[in-house]
Length: 147
Image 1 (cartoon, rainbow, N blue to C red):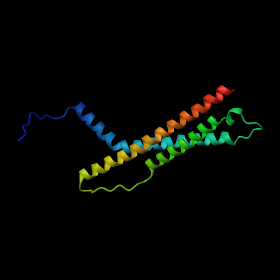
Image 2 (image 1 turned 30 degrees about the vertical axis):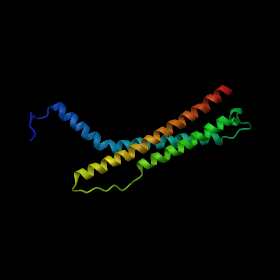
Image 3 (image 1 turned 180 degrees about the horizontal axis):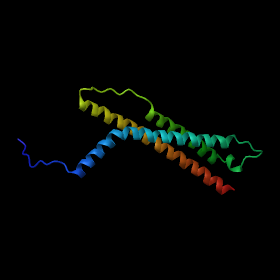
Image 4 (image 1 turned 180 degrees about the vertical axis):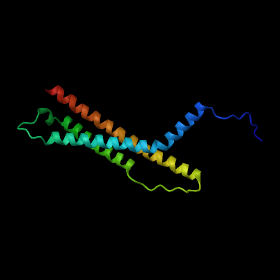
């Protein structure tokens, strides 16, 4: 039989910390979805700006646009941004999650699965976005060095 060493009522600080953690736990899914929406907005804005720049017509294109490395990293940036966008959309896409209403442990398991699922897709989206920004950075460095 286990021995009870001591029991006490939680103090105000402990109560505030516990309530803060409860709030974070229940808002974590919303925070993940908000972050994904922000990333989706960034990607679509950057792709729109990139396509706007590409469609500007000029008599002669800058010489650096003919470099294979610039084309390669430019294509890579667009591909990574599109993949990042798709991963972000998976995070916010409605999905059916089933849990037994009378079984709190089953609900907690579904909740943990939901967090893991959304976290994984958001993390992938962020890494792809970062890769695209790095690729664009390489293109910009080459462009600046060629002028």
